[in-house]
Image (cartoon, rainbow, N blue to C red; front, side, top):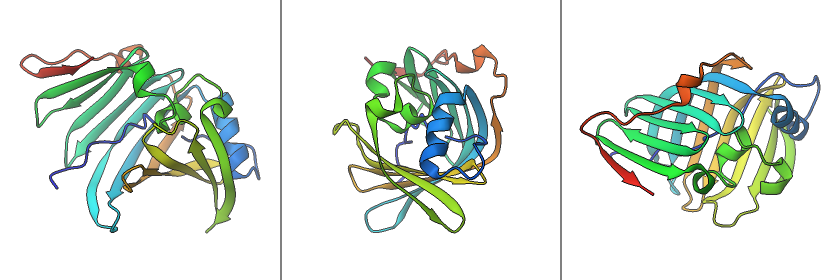
Length: 205
C-alpha cells in the first residue's frame, strides 16, 4: 500500500503533570491546564494482521482551543492544519488539499482529546488505567459510535505523555511516540493559517 491516509489526531497529548498521578489523573490535568504544545513525533500504523502500512516522522504544534498543525516530513510529506474553524489536509505528492469544517472533523476524535474545548467527559469514557513498564496508561472510548475510533490510549512516564495508541473501526492500530516535547510554548498565530498553494486541487465541503 502506497500509504495509509494520515490519522488526524489532531490531534492528538502531553505535558508535565502532578507527581505520582496515574494516567487518568494526568489526562484530566492535561486537559484542564495545557494551552499549547510543540513536539516531534514518530507514527506507525499496522493493519489487522500486524503488518506495517505506514511509518512516518514529523512535528506537531497545538494551541487550545481547536488549533493544531501536524507536519509529516518523511517519507510522505503532508500537512494537517486547523485554524479553529476548518481543517486542511495538504498532500504535497498528490498536489491536493482536502478541507472540512472543524465541527465535523473533530467530535470524539483523537484531536478532541488534545485540542478540543468541550469537557472531556462529554466525548469520552475513561475505561481503564494501569501501569506497564513504568508507564501510566489511560484508555478511553469515544462516546460517539461514528467517530471512527474504537479506543484511544495515552501513556505517561514521569508525568509526561510519551505515547498515544489508537484503534480505528477498520482494525488499524496507530502508535505515536512523542519526543522533544515543549509544554505551553508561545506559538505564532500564523502557524495555524493555511492558504492552498497555486495549482493544487481543493476538495471538500
